[in-house]
Amino acid sequence: MARVTILLGLGLCALTLFGLLSSTSGKIATAFIPMIFGIPLVIAGIVSLNPHRRRSWTAFACCLAAIGGLGAATRSAELVLDLITREPVQPLPMLIIVILAVSCLSYATTMSVVLWKSRRR
Image 1 (cartoon, rainbow, N blue to C red):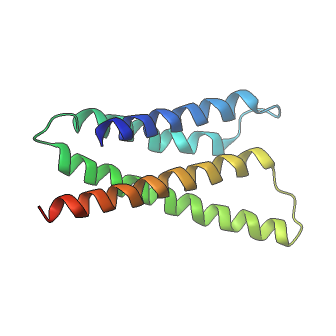
Image 2 (spheres, one colour; image 1 turned 90 degrees about the horizontal axis):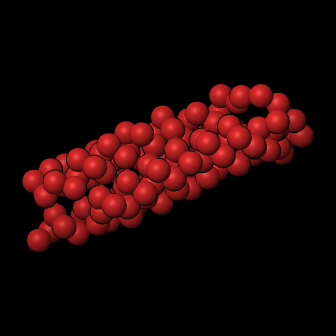
């Protein structure tokens, strides 16, 4: 569980670097959002390598990913509504937010199930 958390955090930091390097119109503020959630997830993953702190820090990482995923999903829904009403939407920030929403929500769902099953033992 801890290694998955570390990998997710590093992946989100890599997503930020991808957003910054592939932006041709300068820096976009949306590119920094994955790193805001990625760095605490890496720290939570490193701390949860300790067996005595594993469950509580995994639960913290799960809550953090759920908050990030729900926020990104809300913003993704707003961008989809903008597309439906034919308002201009930049594709790179939309891609970053959708990837953030999918990765964080899938991690939060998976870890919630894992934590729930380990609670019953």
